[in-house]
Image (cartoon, rainbow, N blue to C red; front, side, top):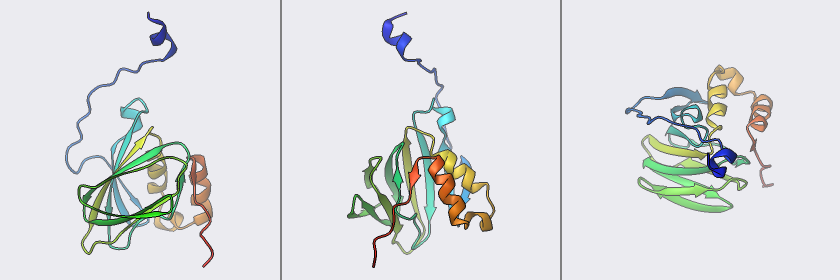
Length: 162
């Protein structure tokens, strides 16, 4: 066996086909999500999550310390903030948010929007699974959510003083 192959355990993966509207459905604070590709299916290399956003929807500013996130706007109009820079984005736009840089988005369209998020490496989709398994009241327990977020290398930076 070549030295490189001995140093890096190479996982054998199978092709994966995810049909339209398939994937694991979760609901995070009223936002419908589909976990379309899990790290369990990719040897940990990538996860893909589709978000169905309503007007005004989007996460609070946050920082991923373990993974990069690439966004692909599938439908609608979004406004991203990455590293303090605000970027408008419509269908077809792709945006890369590197790990360790604060980012967020808001859905600014009038009709529901769809956003694809690609996490490299995978693992963060498990955060969505854990939160999605909670009932609505539990999902509003901010101290508990913050503790779970820390377990996934997610940080919510303090909001700037007004």
